Image (cartoon, rainbow, N blue to C red; front, side, top):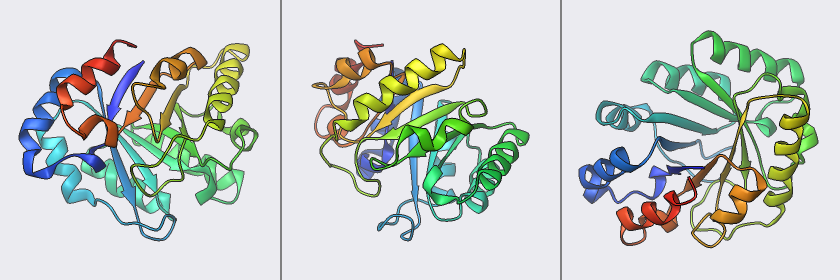
Amino acid sequence: MYVAPSILSLDYSKFKEQLDTINEKCHYIHFDVMDGHFVPNLSFGPDIFKAFRKNSNLFMDVHLMVSDPSYFSDVFIKAGADGITFHDEALGTLEDKMALINKIHNNYCKVGVSIKPKTDVEAIIPLLESVDLVLVMSVEPGYGGQAFIDSAYDKIRQLDEYRKKHNLNYLIEVDGGVNDKNAHKLKDCGCDIIVVGSHLFKDNLEKNIDDLNVYE
């Protein structure tokens, strides 16, 4: 199970120091994009993303918490994203969702679909044969520092059972309230990638990553 630091929580007064640690110890960087409409907060645009891209060769996992994921996918693919994850709730029809998945893949980029805590796994079953990743939100998207919502465990188990039954290869990622107290259970449920923000950056970044890497 891999650790994906959420740079929403990074201390930007220590940008180089913290990014050097992440580059040394991690495989992924999780980059949250929020538009102030789909979620009640604003985050980063493509220029900030390019600074990370310039200074890291890690897999850049871009999470679009936006109302128009088709537009923003183009922006961040052009900026150098390796993976684009959009929210199932942001698009109304299966046709629109598949069109976006195909467009992202046609631009040689991995694609993921995310669900909020109140969205059931059944909502994305028609997409699972076509995506590379499923992101289970274990908090309401839009803010850091929230407590983990336990219903995520069952969703991860359900997704793991489904991919085994149907011989699929999508990765399962979880984001929100992840720490050293619940990481082992998430791995046991079938999680492949844990997105960690507040817990990782709260004091000793290197030690906190090492503590979670024991579950790799």
